[in-house]
Image (cartoon, rainbow, N blue to C red; front, side, top):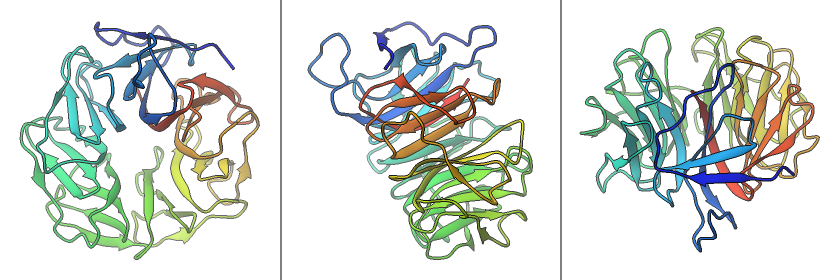
Length: 328
């Protein structure tokens, strides 16, 4: 395994070096990870821009973190993280942080920013959907129409930001009015863990479920079909798509590792060579080089593939539960 070099700093987050991607990884917990020999583990937001050779930690020393979002066109200055204690926000590239939510908003699982009106921010939580229209200063509960308020994931339609999708314990829900009301879109009664809108076709949606594998819709959720041929684990926590090829998909599963499809989900094959932990909760394909794939495990840290998932090597954050990735 590569030696892990970490530095805790109060300076601002560095931008991507020329031709390199800055990867943001969020961690929920860790078994033994330390910085500077401190007694308590360092958990929260980390970045690397050298494929995991070195990492930096940002923000509070211990933050149980589930996801991060970077405000579009802010050059990385405005960052939100969804945490166990609410939504935290930095407006100075990570130099300082503040909780933007009150005591009613906890166990925040994902945060999403409207790409057209960046003051509009959504949070998916264990207690439903919340929305802010002023950059996180005030939040309103937006659960009208939801049968289950455990919302694991939320995404904003890239063409029409008033259209929102969320993954719940009771199926996939859709709002056409900026989360003011929700309607069941499909897969009623299935525990949806993640939802992905194709980067190539906004009408194509994929979801991963707790017990039923992966489903796909090519008509914005009107009809769904399972795509599980070759998938050895039907508990799917994360999905990713190659930004340069619509047919290449990745799925992260519980106890089954990573699976890859090269035919748009019609069939899957196991891609676990080099992985030492097969509980996968985060996957991301590097947009600058689709051969590079990042994998976040539950308890094993980050793994990186430089050949499209055929082989993996350890990429840092040993023993961490890596919950999600984003990039700048």
